Amino acid sequence: MEALQLLTPRAGLRVLITGGASGIGLAIAKAFVSTGARVHVCDIDGKAVDALASALPAVTGTRANVAEAADVARVFDDVERELGGLDVLINNAGIAGPTGGIDEIDPADWEKTVDVNLNSHFQFARRAVPLLRQAPDGGVMVFMSSVAGRLGYGFRTPYSATKWALVGLAKSLAIELGPDNIRVNAVQPGIVKGPRMEGVIAARAKQLGLSYEEMEARYLEKISLRRMVTQEEIAASVLFLSSPAGSAISGQALSVCRNVETL
Image 1 (cartoon, rainbow, N blue to C red):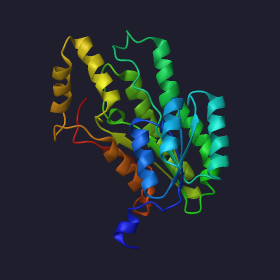
Image 2: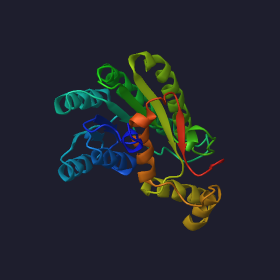
Image 3: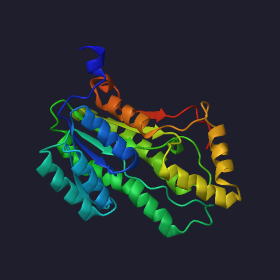
């Protein structure tokens, strides 16, 4: 197989992306569609789901709160109806969670972050595995972790804790599911340009009494190339892991960042 073919996922792949109607999830959906994949997304924003499905005929969608078991079940009912099976699960849904010292964080905010960022990934994985076992070329599962899942992240402990947990989940499932020809990896984006990161910077700036620009500069000083990662760069890494070129890669946490050593 030629190198270019190795780097491109097989046309016709059936892909489910959680949190797939905006941000990184949307970039991943568009990237898969460009390779000829059939994509189903779920997202809590029903209007965004409808807009995406209208703009891209290869995409179907379900409005769902990934933290609700009944909604997860409904997503898989729709996946089986729309796609007739599953080859790739991209567990992307997540929230930023609260910013603050551990003694300041509301337990309800902690629990919500864990429900969305970790428990939902478990729920989708357990429902996806029976379908992925039937994937003709083997199944693929990708968990969207974070650079905060390999580094400490002060004042963002709920977020960081869940992202560390996703790496452990991915590595453990790779061992468990390898005999079923299912590859499982995690992707760890660095500081990603977009509205969510802008909100994080703004919250930290307010806490420290700094301007947004001053706080942004502090974040960029920690990055070797002094710029943020783009959503499209994250999507390209996910495509690689889902392509024949990634067929020998499982149980790994792939950092997509620019030499970030502290947050």
